[in-house]
Image (cartoon, rainbow, N blue to C red):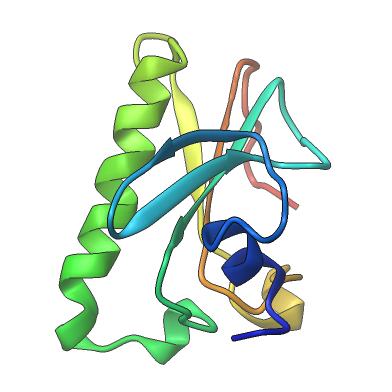
Length: 114
């Protein structure tokens, strides 16, 4: 989508601090980090929200989660721990209409969140 900021990042039209990318995914540092490590992992294909997926999307969903785990290890978070978050809709905290996983780490996480 031409007006989607995350599509712009995935296509290289909008600059971002990319930490990993492949054919299906892009991982980049969040501009407004909520933890010492805050990385977003997105599918290259525009999917507005996790609610816009179905069983045919298990490949891309699995890829996004696998990349998040790989990036967490590369960032040194695999031993201390980290949090993966997917928000959906305004009340769920989704602020960009492109499916993304937040990888948060580098500090103790509290529960319940928000």
